[in-house]
Image (cartoon, rainbow, N blue to C red; front, side, top):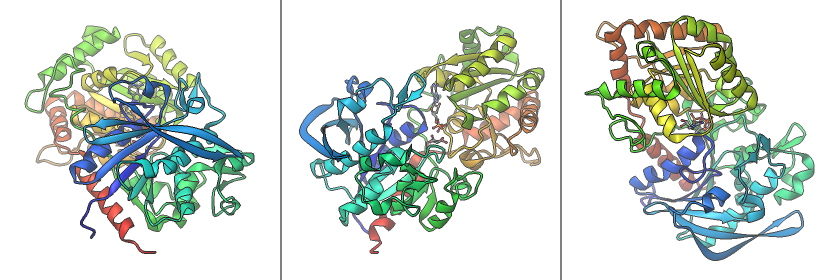
Length: 489
Ligand code: ADP
Ligand code: GLC
């Protein structure tokens, strides 16, 4: 074991609270604090998007360092900015206005930016160019998802002993594809442009770059580490994943319980804890009123959903199962943003069942807290789910998860078996098949338990006792970093 804790640079295309589209930002925003608490010295680096530059709280200043990056025969100039994520955790920004001073992170108005390969190839090279200008030498670069995949082969090309690259897969569904004609943009030798390198069915995959050329690979849950090695979960890269399985570990995401604490959550109309859940009833009443649902619905099971409205999240099942769910007496409230087809689908449901269904479209952090607190259940019928965070927040808020048994959902929820006479210790409801019928059965079981208040309360209490804080996961990351640094290959 090395005694000094490593200096870790977390490279991420989104970091809460500066820029966020999904759970990646929450992980990149909260893991640094957890690593620092264990004695490591983390720093974060991300692109200087428009929204980030407009955020004054982080106190960004221009360091005067210019970052020159070769790209397809030109030199592109960037700048290095510095601020603080939390006291003691530096956040470095790579600024390049033509690439990042835009309204969206990866696209706008429902369309991906066509130059995403150029934007993130630039970002990765700028990160490497920034290394000598950071506060301290970097031991480990922790890169996240396709946007930072290129860092792994680029690091190898630098030929340095340190930093060493660890790559985290938050979502295999986003392959970071580029047409083969964009190869010159990546500034990598042609020897990487083949099946053992970045080639993906005739295209280039930036995710695959991270996967193949990292020293170690992490998925955000143990179940997902297995699933990505199967044809169903591998998005065409399952063979590659099997080939690299020796360097793969599943480490569950943690929760920042300072941000997600029903006892002190400033977004809630009333606070509560395990000892006194009366505030949760106030949250439910207020949520119903906020959504314009009848007050009488307070006696009905309220199912909440919050997340990106994409195929991954299983919304097709919801549309198919809706009638049965409403017939069972449940009320459904959805908060999300994403693909128009799913927004329309949910909008139609809300119009057809005005007494039992409401939807809010857009990204609203405060409402997501009120929804998770006010609902009786949080439903995640995902097609696949690398980790999933909403079910973890739900457990802490006394809200029972109804989930499909995949990925992190499978690892973090214990299905109600109702067979332990000592009292309940199960924390939610799971179903396995990606079928509306299977989901309806789980919802019916949930509604049945809701009708039996003592048992339902016992399940809530079991969930409230769960601990998904970062502590144990951050330790696993540190152990992994130490292993990677000790390796002399
Ligand atoms: P993913 O990263 O696949 O989107 P996760 O469950 O890991 O899924 O994380 C999503 C996070 O973003 C959750 O904390 C969820 O509450 C939050 N979130 C997603 N969509 C919205 C939204 N429209 N408004 C507020 N929060 C949202
Ligand atoms: C991804 C996954 C989600 C995971 C999040 C953070 O976007 O879809 O399951 O929780 O990343 O790791």
